[in-house]
Image (cartoon, rainbow, N blue to C red; front, side):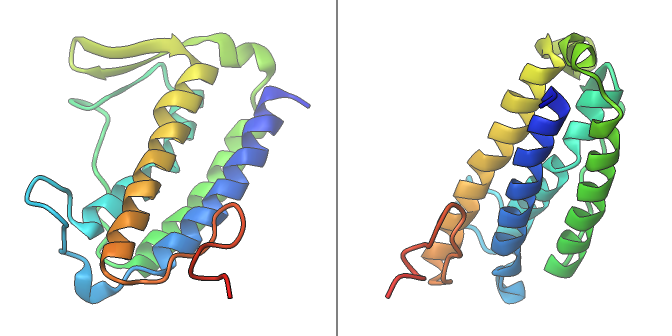
Length: 164
C-alpha cells in the first residue's frame, strides 16, 4: 500500500465520521458557544470542515500562509458544510492518487507571512497539522453537542447515545 493509499483509507473513513457529527448540528444553535473564549458552534464546524481540504494544500503547495493564500470558510448552514465535505472528499481522493511516496517527503510549511509556524515533511504535516487537528476539533464539537443535549453519533463504534 502506498502512503497516498494509506492516507486515503483513513481520510475517507474520517470524512464519513465528520459528516455524521456535522449532520447533528441544530441550526438554531449556530452562534452558541460554551464559554466566552470559545468559538461558536458554527465557526467550529466550519473550521473542522475546511480542514478536510487542507490535505490538498499539503500535497500540492509548498506552504499555507495565513496572511496570503488562506480564506476562512464562509458557510452558513450544515447543508453547505456537508456539500463541501463531499466535494473535498472527491478532490482529495484525486490529488492523493496522483502522488507517489517520494512526494510525501518534500518539505511543507505553515506560515503567517515570513513567520514559519511549522516546517516538516508533507506526510508529517498531513498527519499532525491536518488530520490530528481535525480530530481534536471534532472532539470539541462533540462536547458542544453533548452540552446542548444533542445525541452524539458513533465515530469508531456505537456512542453512549446509541447503546441500549
